[in-house]
Length: 193
Image (cartoon, rainbow, N blue to C red; front, side, top):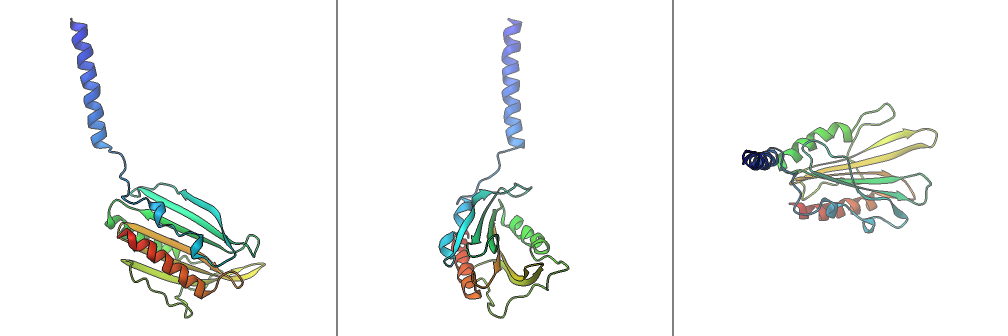
């Protein structure tokens, strides 16, 4: 009889600990709309671009429940121009705003062969829907092939953070093309709010 009670108590204790553990470490939240939904697709690009790396999940980080990435390349130049779109989802808008500020130094980095980041006169784009937004370009000296323009747009849209970087290269992408891509990102991200 004592062994039976001991067994029942053990089962209750283990079940109770499971409830306590799940309360202390609940499963991570998930976005209402899948993060991948907000990644741009090939239709946003001019002819001659292709999907180099299809949508994939990036590395999880503290405070970040979900992040997705996609990479594109211009087929005209071997190993040449590329574009990367990243979308991060946070359980709280406050966390997205904090990450937006933290990403400024990483996204708009400084380097010896890099001009200061500035909004190009050819494309003074400002997002009409983002809570916070910055778009700028810099010239990068890339020896031995010369130099290229790198443009990046980062925006917070409610609990989502979008980071888009692209090489603007003659024959593959114009500033007019880039303006259409930024508008396509804003159209998708506007559904996140």
